[in-house]
Amino acid sequence: MKRVKKYVLTGMLLMLLAVLTGCGTREPETGKKISVYYVNTAETKVEVHDQYLNTKTPEEQLEETMTFLSTTPEKLEYKAPFDMGFQVLDYEVEDGKLVINVDKAYSELSVTTEVLVRAAVVRTLTQLSNVKYVTITVEGSQLYDNAGELVGWMNAEQFINNDGNE
Image (cartoon, rainbow, N blue to C red):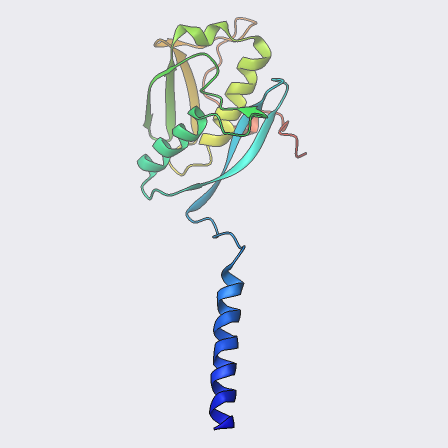
């Protein structure tokens, strides 16, 4: 009888241990990890934060990433690049080249903010398998920088690393 009690007690302790190891731990994130770049509230640098894509196809992953870039996180220390006073009208990807068409309000961003928005968008989106280059158009017209130069196609390597982690 003592042996049975010992086994029952050992079994109960093992079950209790199994239950307690599950308490207080966070579920691991699932899906493909991607670095999403946001603009800090002072609009002086971009900050990188990990997100997880829960979609499978490249098209769905692009849509999900565009949502990340449009949604300002609850943490008010940084802003979503597409949530800074302008609207994305549409976007299209073909042969690894993504065209993002925005409204005229984009042209009203300060020079520094506009460059940070471009850096955040390009550095985020070119991590996707179907996006190698990004260009931004303003209501269908090509984007020019403050010096009057055509911006054209961009990739992540064109931007100085200024995400606060380097």
